[in-house]
Image 1 (cartoon, helix red, strand yellow):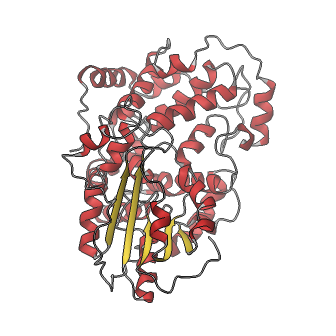
Image 2 (tube, rainbow, N blue to C red):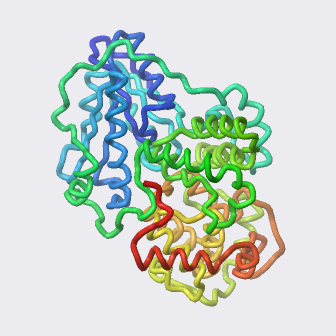
Image 3 (spheres, rainbow, N blue to C red):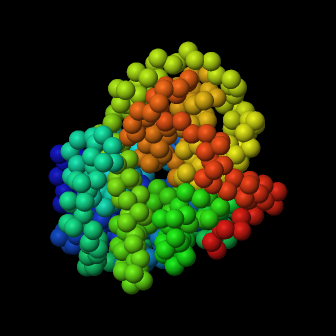
Length: 460
């Protein structure tokens, strides 16, 4: 990512875990290990959590901190150094990366086309004074292999499938030749499961968003969700994936977003289990690889991820023709945030976001369509959906998030019959949801969450 050379008098190779906060099946960390072995150096794994990232709150901090003990334990087993820095207050040091770079032969980090990693990888390399490498550890088929923005799933699918035999293989796992033996850095933050609530409360962040009722962070929890999905849900995924009350999906999106598990590893495990039990995993792999990597392709080749200008021409023209259509009812962002609409299903989906930190994928489409229908302008609708995900969603601020939100406006979709407000954009109705899903069961489930503060479907 820059023209700086490897440092000759270095102490280590530095892996900066921005998004892929894991040890196993991490191509970026594997590259750092290989580079360190070539240079006769150890590896230092640096992970930071600052109080100043956008929408920093108890939910995100709790989820990320829960993964730190897993990471530390695994790194010790591999002989890799670990520095976890919890920057609690804005007055605390904010230049640790640059301090570490002074003693690094090179910096290796994550190639990620959204959120702060995208900003960092654009601005930091020129300031480090040392070679800076970004490695794609998020996709099965690397983003760089698809050289242009794809129009839809049907255009990217054959390209992905052509490349899959090359990339659907176990990630490299080089052994560390030179264990890290330097003392702990003075800014290292010790984290245990018991101390997480206290650490979160000590941070200068938004304490108005509580931890998720459904999800606990960390690689161990990610693998627990994967095991549960394979043994309980993969066999019924194709039939029940669009029924929220069936709980047939993997619920891995928060763990994929924060890098606690690898999509490559998930795909390989799904294939292995399906072969052993004579199942067909194609529908799941379509979502995990083709649809997810369509979103990464969009993010990688788009200058803006939060603008209606990125929509296809037909969608922008259709929305322009209907921008003055009357919205009745119309709700403010505050009313939507508090789930105060006339629609009991929509209110329940919003409450699921507030309580669990994630909306079931099928209902999230309905959720988004109604935000469009009830907002004064299309831009208001887009801004509200992004804001809600930025603040509450454990799988928010992700290429998938931006793509799924913009899909509601026509991205990666096709024209439909003309109607008010939506124009030729796909429309979804309450009656349609009632025909296709168990709304009554879902309403009862969300009511239970709200009343008890407990999620019976939480794993561990």
